[in-house]
Image (tube, rainbow, N blue to C red; front, side, top):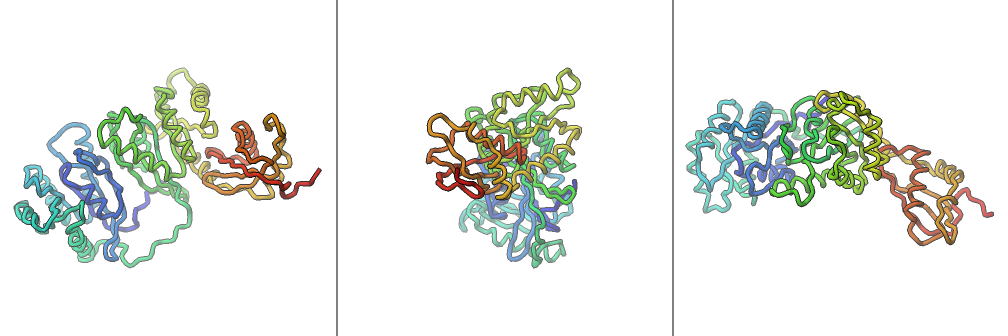
Length: 459
């Protein structure tokens, strides 16, 4: 797979600093939407987050990073620092954010020295200057030795316009690549939005990194490492995918930190905006109650679903077969009987080609439309009397497809009552048998009609 730039040929503006100085608030302010998690807890952001931005006709890409603490040798701070170094290497400009209320702290001095050594254009952003009267708080930060200093309030937007004027001018003066004045390239194909969902520590970030063929998400053995949803676009054989690595979803009673609560909410939101959900399971642990709970989210949101059984390289050495695992999954997730099951190893890349092909298949099925003529022939051959409930015989006059994504059908019947669940299942099973619709839920609605429908003769 080839990675797609996002946006194309844009200069990258990287936001850096120690924890809890307001980097994500500034990131959201510049990109114009609430993309990053924001809260009072330090360490909310861990992975690199990218978003397109524009100021006065100059388009660029803004990058949010986790709080840098170079002296801490623990696993997650170390991974955050490694991710941040990657962002610095990709950067056209750097913004070092500090907290005006806290004053200059030793860690600010350490980071200023570190970033100056990078040789990249560096600007100091003194945040939390919430009124003109508090602008004097920025004066002390000049001793960090950074030429360009901007007092701002990222929360209220004060001073951000001056900062962005400076950023846009820097892009132009340095001759950095920009999309300013260029027209957007027309999209020739639909981008398939794929969310990777599941409980913590089943390998979601490892899968994203493997699909991108580079480290985009932090991966550790600790559950709950990912907090923000991390997304990136790739292209394969002319087909474009946007993969979204979401935070591990826990039950409501199991989330305690604000960051965890917000990340679960964000994961649900990204699920709602995706075309296909990859529901990841851990082959070494089998299907858990939480797995079935998360699968229910995907089913209820009417996303297309692929069940991805990860860590198969470990289980394959044992005695259980794919058929045995498939049977157990089908028994415990009966509501996802339409979802294909793919066994992979995100760590080794085993069967990733099959997974991508399956994603393409279910994405196409999600937008499949059956013609009226085909549907009329299908209804004429349908033995609908078998599905009727006791009492007044239920008559199906005709069936039409009203929409796609998900495929939605309207059944015109001789009753004002909603179709019984068993009748809906009968129709759904027959539609799938005839037309496919692999991996996608089917919505069936009913409408009362006295008409016999097209192609139907009165007895």
